[in-house]
Image 1: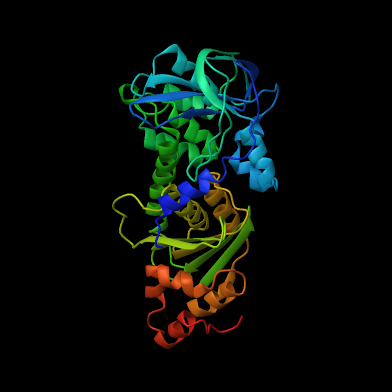
Image 2: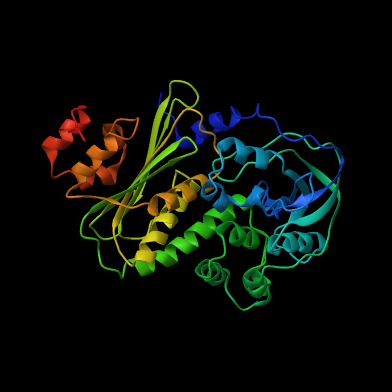
Length: 395
């Protein structure tokens, strides 16, 4: 049976619903990492609110995706952090950022540390949320009362907040250039702290993640297209959180393909999904969702740092035990891959032979699904035939 990625991910996220989240009552005191969440249902009338841990002190690690792989956190530890975050929900209009409630959310998002909070809920918080787009969180409920202690704002985010003539895209690019963590930029953008004064609004968390990846990626791409092309095939690899990643850089002008496989995560399924773009800007939203843009940004980030241009084909396989935890999983794994020393190869087939010895899924499946990958090796028809028939050369 042929299934699209969206339908498959619905099955996958539904299978995580048995995980245990923190239990709290209708009254709660604790610390926000800082963390906020803006829903997308019924936009522009949305539910927004803080995410609070039922503990006091420094809870920053619970909402710092950039630190999880760097600190070798396990999947269980990351899920544990997220299941301890309780989401408060309050109806707001996305275009009205001048209410006291939204101002509190802005105080949280701009904070340079955890914020002590108090919340009263209309009902006992329950449930949990897992998604391939945003990081998971624990139980949620409607807010009846919400108070926070005053805190100190991050200096870079504060500067952007008070610059009401600066376009949001320029603010995001400037903050990224200054080294502000992606998660901090995204949260601040989501609660309407950027852009020209009259244009500021709440942006649903899921949309804001892809928007920031896209704006940063487009800016980096304009720089990368001015750089010299690399002179060999290069392969970067990384594995974590039940995923294997291979980033193949080719000595061509910029072109990009993202191909991901899900292998026996629910049972015996083997699904492979792929999307790509050429040298020209991609039109329309990728059917693969936000991970397409997170991966693209991470690769361009490294190329811009190296002042090099290349074509990029990224292969990912998710293995048994994989749990959808948001596109940070892709962004941070690809960033980690790009920070590893590259293996160099004389041609694309040698690089693919190397990948074949590391991945579980036969490389022929990636070739079947990846249009850009097939195009890149089409001139070697006999060897391509060997790959597709399972007779790939050994490593």
